[in-house]
Image (cartoon, rainbow over all chains, first blue to last red; front, side, top):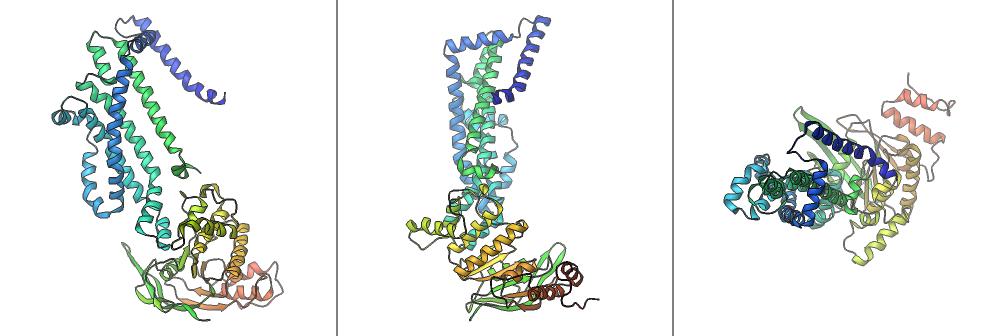
Length: 252
Length: 267
């Protein structure tokens, strides 16, 4: 009941927005922009004919693969760059140049290299989520407080113990933050990538609905579904933040 | 008793953009095995630098630190540093922290050894707790226990209790004495609290302001448990404060409880 109360104001804003949307349509008498009710029936149509699940699972699969590969590359790379000064000096300038390039700018090259199949969007997701995670992990290693490293040095532990018992646990909270950012970016990018040249995915669904007969009800339905899934993915990453091996960082 | 630590004319300075800053200037003294030496000095005088040099975290520009007859150049688990901010690993439980430094025992015994020391410092029942679940005083106990676990020969304590409130500070001092009565260690304590030095130490060294030299050395001849309010202890305190250049402050503080006593030659 208490939690419901906390949600009430944000719920009210959403209801208000829908009401304004509806009212504007009645006043202007637009024939092409859908009413909220049309969006609901459109969504129902997609659920009934089964295409919604196909598109959602196609998008999620691409994000899963691209993001998964990015985590596997970014975390070890970030640890290495954070720990070994030479590696940082060598790679950081390159990453600082590559990082600001919008993933959208990679689309032509992705198509050139990987064609119009699944590999292109997966590559785009990879390239967009790998940099924030590398940076977060590197910064995480660099910001480990000296007093902890000194204490470990004082106890004369092996380099391996130092790495597994001090460096990695100290950095994990930052890695989780990086993953949260990375997954957010990945979800943004998959939709954009699918708009270009594919036959499945939520991005494709939106473009296809417009091209095949101006079904703007399905366009808006697709947008709302993208938002809701993005929210769920973020909530999933927040669950990671609650796990016992990173909770020390957030608990005060 | 034999000499444990010998500091031979060490000097240390730091170079920054603003130029060269000499922090320690030719400091020599020795510490006997099992002795508790407190070092007091004005703030910013280089007390911590001195302790870091002795513990091996810094290398002197000149002179040498000799421990057990051998040149000491890098930190090891025979001498554990306990600092003001503390360094208990927040990502490990109390027990895991205590087990951190254990090598050379059968791994199966690690938890038992850790729990034994948790008990000694009064953390029984908190072995599974994380540091953020502990109070400041308990954190200090955990840090002390983690040091004791590895059976260090020397404890280097850099204002270990100064972040605690007054009551907890007093409690930790008594706690430390209780533990040292059980397991004798050589201790070097940095403090700005003269009373703390007199309460704990066998000998108090007074440092000058920067660049630090040793101004004076006082033996503390009182048996434990010590009564800090005793006339002799107060006299020693006045003498140490005088070396720190605090004649008037000493007199002001003494007035309420020890008005008729002794003298000062501050005029």
